Length: 155
Image 1 (tube, rainbow, N blue to C red):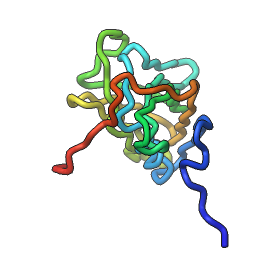
Image 2 (image 1 turned 180 degrees about the horizontal axis):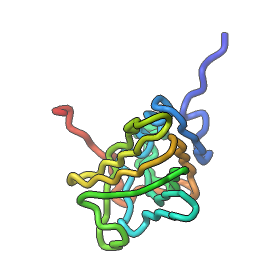
Image 3 (image 1 turned 90 degrees about the horizontal axis):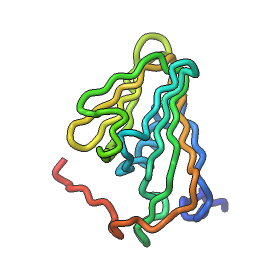
Image 4 (image 1 turned 180 degrees about the vertical axis):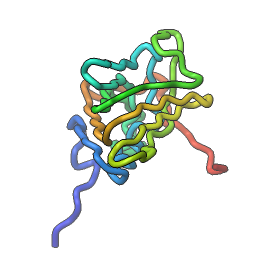
C-alpha cells in the first residue's frame, strides 16, 4: 500500500511551488499566512511584467514543533498593474503581516491576486493569468519571537 507524501518528509528541503489555479493558490496562501516583510520588500517590475515580494514566512509545513521561519520569494507573472490600499510601498519602517492570497477572476484567464495584510492593508495585482511562484531562498531559522502565530477561532 502506498502512502501520500507528507510535509515533514521534506524537512529542511526548500519549497518551490507554482500556482496556476485556485486550488494551487489555496496551498500557497496557507503556506504564506503570517509571513512578515518590510513594505520596502515589494517590487513591481513593470517592464518584466512581474511583481515580487521577499517574505519571512512561518514554516507551517514544519508543524509547530519549533517556531521557524524561512525567507521566501513570492512572484507573480504576467502582471499588468498593481494598486494598494493601506500599504505604503517602499517604507522600510512599516512591517506587514500577510494574512491571505486569493484570486479574483476576471475576463478569460485574467484576474487579480488580492494580498490581504493585517490592519486592513490590501494590494491587488492585476494579471493576464494566474502565474504565482513561491521559492524558499534561505535555510530555515528560529523565529525571533520564538512563538507560533496564533489565530482566534472567532472568525
